[in-house]
Length: 240
Image (cartoon, rainbow, N blue to C red):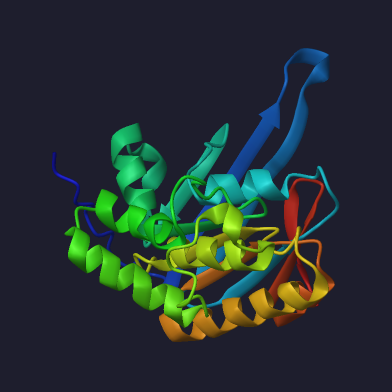
């Protein structure tokens, strides 16, 4: 099976534009129980910028992040990635697109417990067709970069919460995606580990040049981002 993804061209009118969402609507339920989460929402992301999405629990921040990452689809609206409408892709093509162009980090690490740190990070490379030897070298180098060179062969349950999140971060970045989406990445970590992950996210943003979008309740993490937006009544409002 061909696992390549057609590289999307840069949007001619937005030379630095990476993602542009327009007119997003998303609701859950039906009839009198229908709840509108996103209401004609517009959003844009430029290459290399860092953005925090803020707002109270249950307002739809994670829903928006899942739509930006093509894990969910809006009821209506468009989602352009480098000028190409990715919501027109079928499921198979969309999965290949996600694997190559988007990295995900979640509050709960979603690591595979039966595998080592190294094997977890190798997984996207192997899925993408890279030879095992090269996948091993690439995963080991990135784990070294996040400070886990001595924990390569430890299984998930042998790692601390902070170490598990760093493994998850390495896995998300091993294919060097242009977009990293993080949903409460330090929500389960103590203050010391949270600060380490905050700093690491920003360092890797600079080193990899990827765009970083973080959904967070943490004022400390939001302060690290160059731009902050708040979800209010289904739309995003720029926040100082």
